[in-house]
Image 1 (spheres, rainbow, N blue to C red):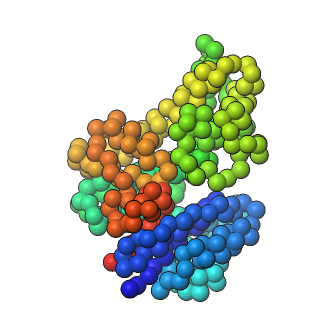
Image 2: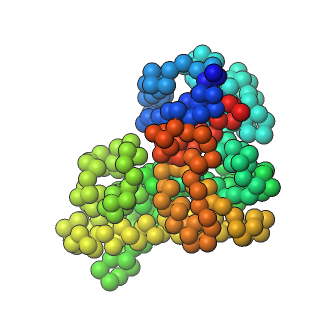
Image 3: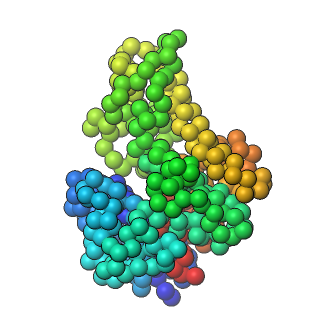
Length: 339
């Protein structure tokens, strides 16, 4: 039985999925911030190899080349490809329409490899659905990708193109900055402009609301303090130039709801822009992926579309289903290489 492991090297997480004979049996994720170098990523690779075991093939995609550890995307792609090759012994890089590239050729094909993890998800969906709209809401970004007549119908490929097309939105359920989600908030009967400092993240918002999925917030908080509702209120209050003691808990919950709705609207707007091209039928199915599956369900409801989970398109063991939906690019690579 062939064993394939798909790897997704992000700027703050390493994700990996093991497929045995095409069936996804285990999916893992580790905090591995690249901002201060690659030491933590090396540790994450060691942990993942121990947890996942041997494999016949390793396929790698990435977004980590954007980390400011690297002077350019070209350098980032080449460095991460070399690192993956050393750690895995034998690996190939996913390069979207260009196929699979050997690590030693990664620099030459950096534009195809850079941030191509969304394409792996869409490629798998295109094999399973004639028409669909992928919405992958993760910790940092949201991918919105149309599939038409069994083919990827994205207008953009590189990040800059996808940002312009509304197919990439820099907002996520954990690391999204509150100050990037809205520029003001209703507070005690007035519109209050926000402090332009990274005092709080969207993880604080969803923690206050009690809707932050368990085990998804792997990064330190903005102030390095506790991941409690009280500490999140304090961080959110600071965004409004206030202390948590300046209002009651109900008021801060209302503020949190405001920011959650602002994020929902931003993703809804982008999805509406993509759908406004008119290429997808009105009955398009939305395929939800990422840690924001429940929020994608709500966006699908607003768009009057049926919503299914990415994991429903794969053969996945029951215990791995939630993780498979959250780590869709790694899963997509493992499944694509097994078929």
